[in-house]
Structure formats: C-alpha cells, structure tokens
Image (cartoon, rainbow, N blue to C red; front, side):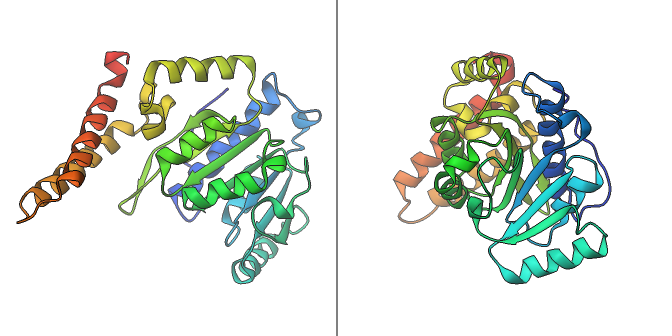
Length: 269
C-alpha cells in the first residue's frame, strides 16, 4: 500500500488535505490489494463525507480522482446549503450528492466503499460508529479525525474490531491533529501487522498510535511539545500553597509515558 502523502493545493487547510490524502491511501489499497473491489480499477469508488460542513473535502475527493461519487451529509442545514453552493459552483452536482442527516443515518448499508469523519470529539465519533455500526462495519476503509479523547478512542477502535492502517500527525495554528485510516475488514497481513505492533508497544498504542511509534512521521515533534506542556503545568501546580497532589502524580505518570514513547523506536518496546 502506497503511503505517500502529498502536498497539493486546493483545500482551505493542511488538516483537510491530510484527510483527502488518507482517503487516497484507502482507495489505492482497494484498487491494488487483496481487498480489491469489483469495478474499483475503473475508478468506481463511492465515499461518504460524514459531517461534511462546507463540502471542501467532498470536492477534493472528486477533483483528485479518489472517488467517482461522494455522498456529503451533515445534520446542520446551514453548512449543508453552503456545501451545495460550493458543489454547484464547481460544476460537480452530478457527482456529489448532499443529504441532511447525522452520522450513518443518511446511508444505506453497503452504499459506500469508504467514509471520512472529522471535526468532532472522540466521544461523539464513538457514538456515531456505535449507532451506525452495521453500516460502518461494511466500509472498506474509514478516515477518522477525532479532536479529543484520543487514547480512549483508539482503545474503542481496537475493542470494536477496527484495524489501524496509517495515522498522521499535524500541528496547525497551534493545535495538534491525529487523522487515521482504519478498516473493519483487514487482510490477513494487515491484521498480523497490527497484532505485532500492539504486542510490541502495549498501551502506548492507545496514547500515541502504534504505527507512529514504529515509524516517526511527526510524533517526536509532538512528544517534545507535550513534554514541555506537561512539565510546565506540573511545576506551576507544585508552587501552589495547597498543591493538588493527585493531579501532580497524574502529570508525572503522563511524563513517564511520554518519555517511554520518545524512546520506543530505539528501545524496541
């Protein structure tokens, strides 16, 4: 599977471009790997953009030849109307269908090969995947970008049968993002690789992502930033007249986990 991530123009942010690039990796996996779809070689890929907002990701999925057809859905009428306008202006209304719906409720089972879900907290994303489990589990790939509760979300994915294929790290305007490509239908090789990584790194996988621990693609930079933040907060709390000892201990444990992750590639944890 080709994991090359490009730096193309046309999106409002690098964060959105990463979502499109991961979708490209997921689509390429289907077209060339053991999970190839009937007709996928001709570009007949259908992708759902769930929570599409103004439709920028949907547009790029078509423009870059990743999908033949996109279903762009959002439960908010305002953003969906803006998406419709952008799609019409691009002359792509025949290839991008908009639907007023939340989560997977706007999709029929098996209607799409893959999906993109971003711009929400991990807890909400877990709920969407749980409530729409039947449809989600028929996706060949999912591009997910939870904006909070990352460790809990990664554990949720593993416990619910999703296998991580690739994740990225990006800092944009002072905020860190960890988009990921997962599948509920891994090949035997992908499932074996996931088990090997999880056995090697243990719970560090949930905190930082097993593929990033094995192959640094920005994780070390994030760990350095996190270490500075944790240490600074810890020192500030220690200076208080009545320092919160339990919180200080939690920060110490987080710093130990951070240091362990920083040495993971060399130590072979």
